Image (cartoon, rainbow, N blue to C red; front, top):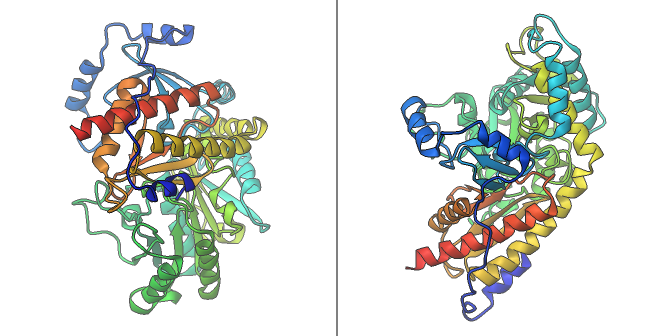
Length: 474
């Protein structure tokens, strides 16, 4: 918990309510590119498109914002009615290099001039090989690496489990409370949150086990979590039948909670002791989000397998598994793959996005942004919503703030969080919530966002927070 937030707990009573800060309302796009893009949407409204969406799209596909995109650049987005938004969601952590990064777009268009699909399993192509080589070079550890490219994060996780089972000859997988690993049936079995992902769609595959995640909120220490894992070995998960332990180094949907480094180090030792593979799920935390290529690097731990997706290709759909060469080669030829896996356009985009991270210093930029957000949130919490911002946490620019009703009970306040998101959207800022109780706001702004955009977004956030506090106090 941030020191500035802790200090609020010692005060006798909340400070006098601050005046509601001013922030810019959404405006009609003035930039030439924005105006031109919106012009192509002439006559369309968000309401009309929402009605069409409700009639045509399955109800289970939810959308956080009732507005439809017309154009986007870096950390800004314009809807079909010409309203401008600062984007702190980044397509759910997909746009670390921003909307339409010039290098990414250029690389994708250049590849499209050659071919868009052959299926790597039929006629292979160099972009797949080049991206695998690059991923192997970025992954931590000295052992030789190999990579598999697929299309989605859930597909990457499923393949990581398949590879682990083939290598070890064991069926079991251990995941953690609050972890999110996908929405396919196998990955749902590993995902540690029922609503909305797992509700009413069980039963789930066998030989998947749940271990406790260390949680300050729930009073679960690292020692408690490790004791729970050892008890799991005694009661349900015979260790010599467990193929892999999978963990997000920073919980994503679970609340942007970093795994304590000592926990990751202990898991590495436990895996080594029992011949279990350690899988680091970096789908949301990877590619500079936390200030390193992969979040697990902060702990010094080297996993056996890493799953990747999201920001790897700057907005193009691609995912993968990176791992020790001997582990990755456990599957026989033909056992891995997929028709669209490692699409050549997405591979070209990924190589360009990785180059942008390297050449534009985005690892250091992520760390600096994280420090800026931490300081700003501490100030805003104390000034605008005393005793409501319980925690500020994360690694690098992968940060969240958690809201509670009061510091005495620390009861999660999902209503306030939802209200902040709604008021932020009205004022021109896109935010997303997360957490087991839906009371955390996560920051996924493009790392390429300018300082001016960051400050504008923070000003809107504070104004939206003030709006929400007033709304819920009436």
